[in-house]
Image 1 (cartoon, rainbow, N blue to C red):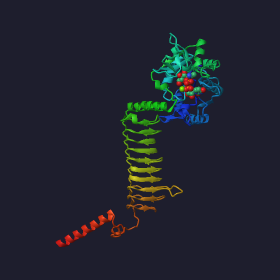
Image 2: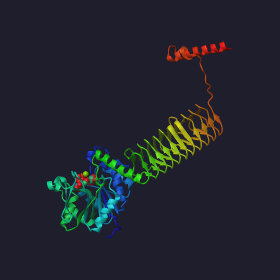
Image 3: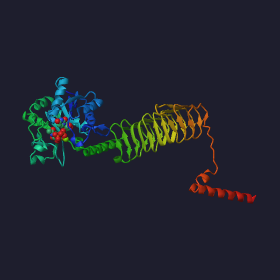
Image 4: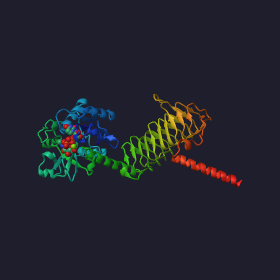
Length: 493
Ligand code: UD1
Ligand code: MG
C-alpha cells in the first residue's frame, strides 16, 4: 500500500503506565502544562500528521483517561492494555485494536508516549520520511545525553545501523557508557511489527514485554533498523514526577514566548510570562511581567497587557490597556481600558473606548461603547448602554437571596456615586441620580433620581455623649476657637 508522503497509517500513543512518582489522584498523563494535559499534547501532535488510525492505549485509571481523551479527540480509538506489562504489550494491544476496527493496518505505524509533551509534529514528519525513504522496518528516534541514566541504550554497528536497544537494567558496563538513548518514539513497518511482537517474550530483568525487542527480532529477520538522532532532548523528555513536569512546563513556555516574540510581540519578562499553546497574539502587543494568558485568549495589535494580569478565554481588541487584572470568558473591545485591580468574571463585555476601572468586579455584564464603570463597584447581570457613567462605589444588587435579576441602564446616563441598583431595575436614557441613591424603582429617561432623606445634624452630640475622647476634645477646641473668632469679629465691628 502506498501512503501520502509522511502520512502514517497509524499512530499509537502509549498512556497505560501508572505514573506512581507523580503521587497524584490524577492520572499522570492528565497533568497539564501550557494549558493542555500531557496526553492532549501528545495526541494533538499525532493528529496533525493526519493518520488514518490513531489509538491511545490505556490501563491505569482507564475510565478517567479514556473519557478525557475522547473529550478532545472523539475520533481516537481507546484500547485497553491487559495484565501483560510492558511497552511491547501496549503497542501490541494498540495494533490489534486498530486491526480489529478496520482491516489490518499496513504501512507505517508511529509509536509515541502520552507523557512526552514537547515532541513536535515536524520531528515526527522527519522520522517518517527518514523511515520510508530508507525502506526501514524499524526507525527509532534518539538523542544524546551526558547522563543517559535509566534510558535504553542504542547499540549501533560500524555501518551506523542499530543492532539492539538495551534497557539500562539489562545492560553491560560498556553498553551503559553509550550516550545515545532510546526516546521510546518509533516508526515501524506494520507487518514487521505485528510479526515480531508475537515473538517478544517477558524474559528480562523487569519481566515485561519490551517493544525494544522488536528491533532485535526484525534485525535477525534481515530487515533494516535505523535511528534518527535529534539535538533537542526536551522534545523526547517525559515527565515522571512533578519536578520534571515543571521543567517541561518551563521549556514549553520558553518555546511559546520565543515564538510570540519572533512574531512581533514584546514580552518584557519571558520568565514571568506564561502563555498557553492555545493563545493567539497579534504583533505590536506588549506583555508586561507577571502575566498569564490562558485558554482561547486572543489579543489584538497595539494592546498592552499586564503587569500581573491573568486572562483566560478573553478576547481583547486593538489598543486596549489592561493592568493588574483577573479576567475569564470575557470580551474587551478596541481602545478600552481595564484595571488596575479589576476582576472580570464570565460574560463581561466591554465596548469600544469603555472603561472598567480600579477595584471593579463585573459578571454577565455588557458595558456599551464609551461607557465607564471607573471605581470601586460591582456590576452583576446588567446591560449598560453607550456613553454612560456609573459613579464610584456603585453596586448592582442582583441577588435577592434566592434569585438573580437583570438590570438595564440606557445611553448617556450620569449616575451618582454610591448608588445601589436593586435589581431588576431599569434606568432610562439621559437619566441622572444623586449620590447615595438606592434605586429601587425604574428611572424614566431624563429624570433625576434621588432619595428623600434630608441630613440632620445633632449639635454638640460628640461633646456631650463622647466626653473625654480625642474627638470631643477636638470639638471643644474648635468651639472655643469659633467663639474667640466670632468675639474678634464683633470687636472689629
Ligand atoms: C522505555 C524504553 C526505554 C526508553 C524509555 C524512554 C522499553 C522496554 N524501554 O522505558 O528504552 O529509553 O522508554 O522514555 O520500551 N506504558 C504503557 N504500558 C506499559 C508500560 C508503559 O502504556 O505496560 C507507557 C507508559 O505510560 C509511558 C511509556 O509507555 O508513556 C513508557 O513507559 P516507561 O515505563 O516510562 O518506559 P521504560 O520501560 O522505563
Ligand atoms: Mg519513563
